[in-house]
Image (cartoon, rainbow, N blue to C red; front, side, top):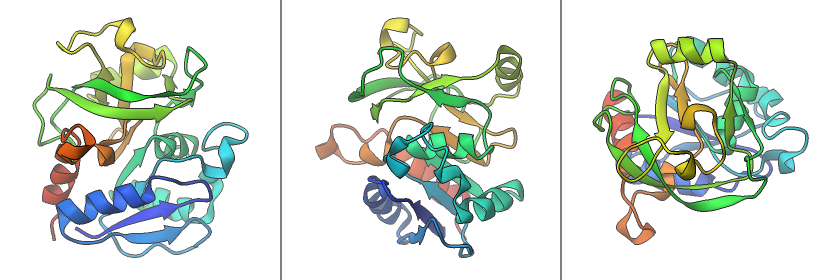
Length: 230
């Protein structure tokens, strides 16, 4: 699997993502500066977390117009895999690669802790290593993770199996008390309609080693490596 990570001014998780991709795929990703106009020939682009452009305007709104994002979107439209994590999720939503938008957390506070995620589908190149209904422990670190979308679009996404993960209680039940940001329908991650683009707020790259408190994020990277193996 050949991969690239897009780096913006304010990114702060690109090295974590690089370590995860290298460890699990065996091939180091290429780091691509956001002002570049060309994208190497890769199977996967990862848009990492952080605070691109200091989160001015809406989070990800400025970064979404970076030159390289035009090429990322064009390749994604042709089937290339794209994974947006946290600020990366915000960016690819703002770039029109996913429906919806990420709003400030309902409590208006930055949230940084491990949360429970329920896997909503195993039928994707990102989630094939998990079982539907499986509960994962993955860290979040965000102020604007409140996923919001109109009801009609959400209903269509539900019917098309585009909901990837939901915040949940340890037993898998959907409970507002275990929703860290007030996200609509407890949504933590979504796909585009062809499921080659995934955005999620939690950080799977920070849940790949026991010393970090969880290895539950490894499944995403293993699934990608298997699906996109040369």
